[in-house]
Amino acid sequence: MLHGKRVLITGSNGLLGQKLVYRLLDEGHKNIHACARGENRLLRTGGYEFHSLDIGNAKEVMNAFSSVLPDVVINTAAMTNVDACETEKEACDYANVTGVENQLMALSALRGSHPGYEPHYIHLSTDFVFDGAAGPYSEEDSPNPLSYYALSKWKAEQLISTSGVRWAIARTIIIYGVTDNMSRSNVVLWAKQSLSAGQTIRVVDDQFRSPTLAEDLAEGCLLIAEKGATGIYHLSGPDTMSILELVQKVADFWKLDRRLIQPVQTALLNQPAIRPPRTGFILDKARKELGYSPRTFEEGLQVVDQQLSI
Image 1 (cartoon, rainbow, N blue to C red):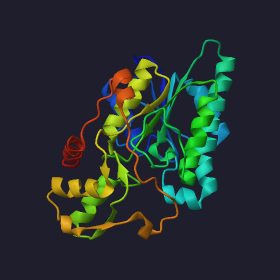
Image 2: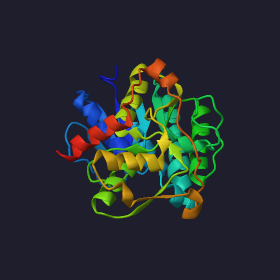
Image 3: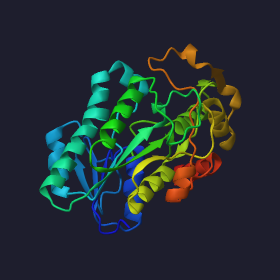
Image 4: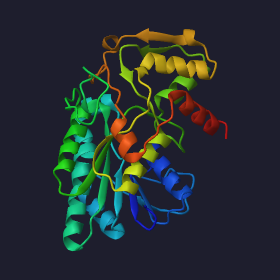
């Protein structure tokens, strides 16, 4: 169990980070440390400590980690805009590789100076480490990153697995959900808002993914933490579909006009970064070892709808 343990969450302003903080608060945890760059964007400000933290800055990481001495670190901080990572490689490496390296170095140093201290480092990775030639993927399949973003996440995975720190990697796919003061949207909210406004949208019909409700991903991460699980786990939604089908399901759920959705092939979008055509995850390991039980896409949309109506 996590009660009594000090849990530190990086990227706490993001979609998953916020869900993790709120889930821990709702479960009555007392030792929650939320870390993010800049100001705290969570509407609830009590019950946890917020630390402004740039994971790319080694000194800041060391100061934060040594003051908290976390039992569990869940690293959700990352640069995830795939095209921006392709055109801004230094910024991508800073967040996705150096940021991870700094955390591992800090934890290793603290282990050396505090006998018996064995923190559990849980890192979020992505389906994009695969090339998409033969999805869905299990944890045993070999990565073959196609984009710079994917490469940065794969580099981080390799750093973690050879670090000597007790680790787990949770790979996921297209996270969606509702959060406080969102700086970036997600595919479900983007589609709903665009179609509600009567806008025509172009949606790729040749990429296949397993959309993941943020609450389910948070649950999976905390199951890893509670069980002290190590190794790689695939945590996504259970349903694999094309992005086009995903957006059509959004339209149907909120009774919006499907005719506004224009199918397009990926090649015609001329995006800087290459996307894997077909990913999706085999969830058997997470179901069996963690008790992970993600909601269907339709059930996830019901959760989103309830939160939007509050």
